[in-house]
Image (cartoon, rainbow, N blue to C red; front, side, top):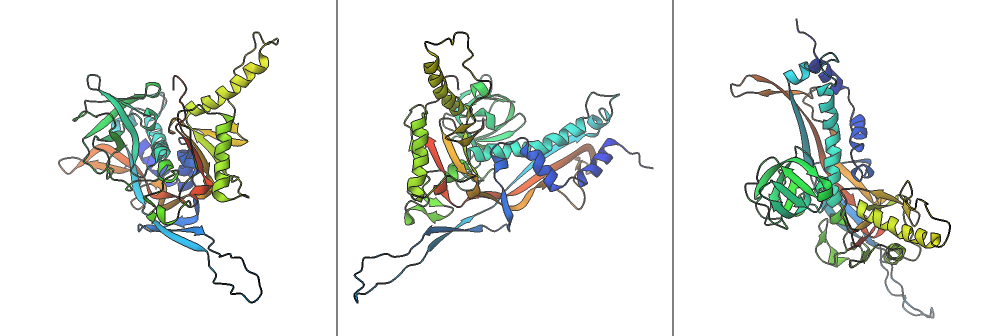
Length: 419
């Protein structure tokens, strides 16, 4: 007779986990990703999805005396059609029978190793997808190398918070469209110093400017998941989901304020809001689901503007001994909510209308299933079973922004010291 054990009960539990439960768990370890929603119901096939853009109203106007003159011809709304291909990701966790047996009750261990493994399996996709869309140039790039310490196996990058311990990364010294020069495994990160520690030396030393991509990515432009840089850009050439940008001047250009190294001020923020009105028309307003997305550097820069004002008000008063640093940071800019994200691009602020973004999904984020099974055995070299088991999470889809002029961004902001 088979003896019940923790693995057996876990397998039974996993089959009862719904996709909605998993979505909730994933949201706990993401900031930006969880704000993108699928439109009911935007499930698509594995073929590229057709995206429709209304690029102009097209109605013709002319002066006329209305005294028998020709009224001329009319026009009609104009549409452009783009395409976006789905991309797929998977995340795997594996464990041995002994690790389960040794921790399956409180008399043996202070925690259940299996339960913690499965909790992490649900959380890591949120972290990973959040990292990818926070850069989001459409190539699965995670960060850029600034230097490499070959003695201590450390890669210094622009933002180490987008990777985590145990993750495999592909390095492209020659940039996109070239061959990967090495694959490395992360032993840990120090986000404050922007350092990624490796388990071993890279087979080819990463160079300054090299790109760090999600493991097993194609390594070409447009082959990965889209995010911030794919959509929030002020380009006048190239394409936007396959549509030539130059063919529709203004429509695919996200309003931008180039700060040129200046420190964030209320005037710069006001100019950004004005840019949206200039792009969309005199009656344009910021959408109800619009938020400012930024890293901690610009959240601090905004707070610093308030501290300067506070200091001016308190100078010459009985402010001696008063705590000028509030317990909580300011939560809005111009009344619009701030979302801070340690994975966001430093020196930049994005004003995102999340009603113009949506997920297009082939399959929702869920456990990989074969029949009713979500836990699978691993086979040994002999063809027989090992005592190791494995489980996966999968997702296939992409992100769409169908109204880029409803969004805006500030680039080239000064980064406060220490960030």
